[in-house]
Image (cartoon, rainbow, N blue to C red; front, side):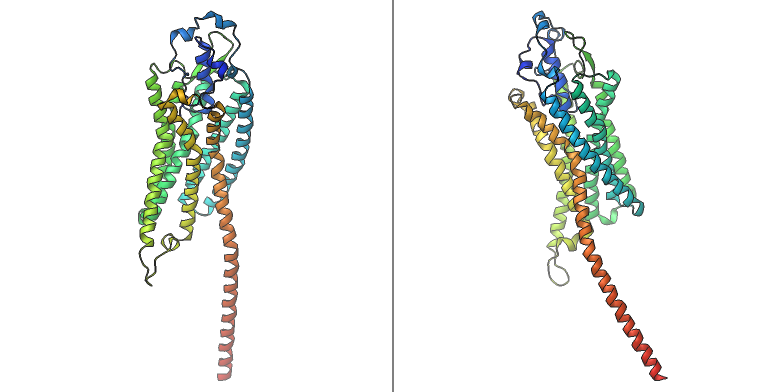
Length: 393
């Protein structure tokens, strides 16, 4: 994701021209809403804007985004609510999955466990960071923490995307190649997901660093300024982040589930022994069908939450000037909406498991009635046999 995408500067900042303050502020305040890197409204800063040669701006008031404002208050409230919901949901799901894994070693449960862990990394690392950053406005944790937290801001999101890919590929093998399934394949895919998340987040500590405002030396910020020598390099990096966090995972997911759907459709058109077409339940089985529906819903939540943000990202890269005219509340809201994805996964998991329990209860009663009937019938047969034996004597 690109910090060059969602501009948060107000009109006051836009009027703060020919000074370092404008570009510095743009670089700073796009960061909390996007997770890779940031640029100014005008691209890479030049020496004139960096050193602030226009001395008349020294006495000008601070841009609104360098002050605590209503936007920061909104961020604190929304992130706090999301953090509480996500923490409760994902911790509950994680506990249930761990309990289930003690009884059975299901691949899908293992992958859902790692998905919950990824969401908890976002919940307890990224969200508190955004809350604290919005409260202080500037960065007050030093250069080392700036670089470390820049890594973890993207790590959880990358991991979540790659685990979703693992789930999709696992469902592909479960439906299309059930005989080729192996216990080790799922573990290997999860290890690759963690390795890829680490690799994709590794550039962050080298890109982000702390800079001091030249005109307001008391103001420090964790920014990407001076990292890229050319604006084109910055754009390439932003596109690569989007590709690995969204586009490539989405393409893999679409291909996997499209193949599954085509296989189900093909088998459903094949007549069974009685000459009737098979239903999807006959093709998959109830348990596999329920798992497939649950994983597809989780993927759909990912697509719905993140697609608007990335549409805005592409718009910014194609036509930066017109994209900057979009209301900044909409721009901020896109990333906040994307972060709700961490809350959606436990909700989806909970809904499908509640449905499963409701279906199991009447089923278990029927089974008990059947067992009772069988028991009584066997008792009657046994008594008749005993009577015949007695009479024969």
